[in-house]
Length: 167
Image 1: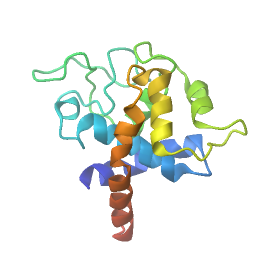
Image 2: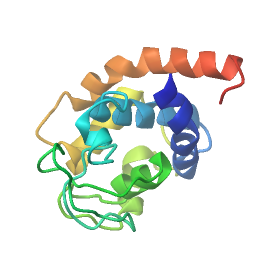
Image 3: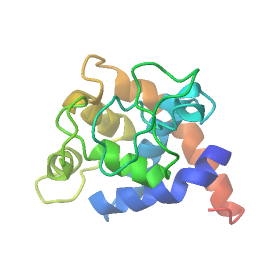
């Protein structure tokens, strides 16, 4: 629950930049992504690298790159601690290729929206797979469905936290 309570607003804020009609589904997808990559903030990727999304070395939208400490995940970028929103924005801004970060928000917007400029009624799994296929993890045709295994749990946690007034 702590992962969701701490990172929900950042995910929701970024989701609202891409859609006004279905930000809830996109928020859940963004939280699924970070929860999966970091083991709900329990893996070294987060604890040592301060890296929510498994970003590789490169220029990441203003995030401060730092030398990796002992025990960090090799091959993953280390950052100074940053907000979920800042790292998510940096990760989404890298398209079209994971190892060559670019300012690519329009490219991602095309992936996450229909021709009318609003996101279609795609599932979290479909959205996550679109991100993967576009370059995040293109070698894994099941990345979206794998991450989607968290979706029902994520929705339940969000619902619980909302009912308690914690998000």
